[in-house]
Amino acid sequence: MTKNKITEDEVEQVAIELLEEQGYIYLTPEEWEIERGDLSNVLLKDRLKSAIDTLNPSIPEEAKEQALREVSNLPSQNLVENNEAFHRMLTDGIDVEYMGDDGIKGDKVWLIDFKEPTENDLVVCNQFTVIQNSTNKRPDLVLFVNGLPLVVIELKNPTDENATVKKAYTQLQNYKNAITNLFYYNGILLASDGLDAKVGSLTAGWTRFMVWKTRDGAKEDKVTIPQMQTVIQGMLRPDVLLDLIKQFTVLRKPKKKIQRLNLQQLKLPRR
Image (cartoon, rainbow, N blue to C red):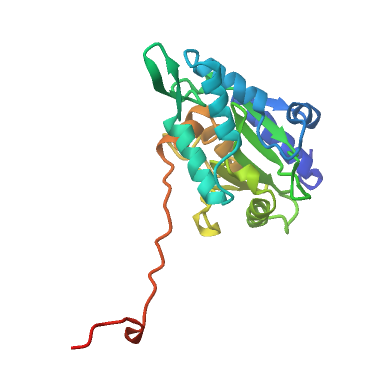
């Protein structure tokens, strides 16, 4: 395959093969469409329910169903607020109550096995169509852990001089505005032209998207190794990905705007 014959589909296929080597199971568009049913639904709910059952064997069924409802119906219409709420559910567990032998009992429902990352249900989907408010968008790749869409990847063709990593980043920003519900659950964004690649968080600007430089965590890869290969084999390895999401995700709320008042607006007592 010569360089001038590389297509975006082939770049996508290379990424999928690299992800399969990391333990992800590939679902074709036909398969994930059957699992989802409704294309406005961004979760693979059967997989999520199965994971909740497996990870929480001592929790009564009604409490597990309550946790599933909370994940599926996040409390806000605001993207960042929902993403923050979901992150707390993911890392701290979901608080549930149920009737025990001695009265009402409080407990936690867990969504992911952080101790044994490869024991989770790992899936990669391509051309993942999402419909929201009559808008139809298709991110190139979405990585699911236990039915939760934690990573969104946008790819461009490396042989097209106009299809840059920056263009892939811009496309991700467009997706955030058009199909917001997919990004409620996002942990990592990845933009690549098939060779070069940069990663960032949900709210990171372009200048905060960075290159991941190591596959083994000990030394930087040679410049001859495509950055897309490095980030998939290094950062998107299940143990590294889940460690980053759990231990290295910082949520910062914007500072409240302080209203500056003219002194004449203040009703001060006369002297």
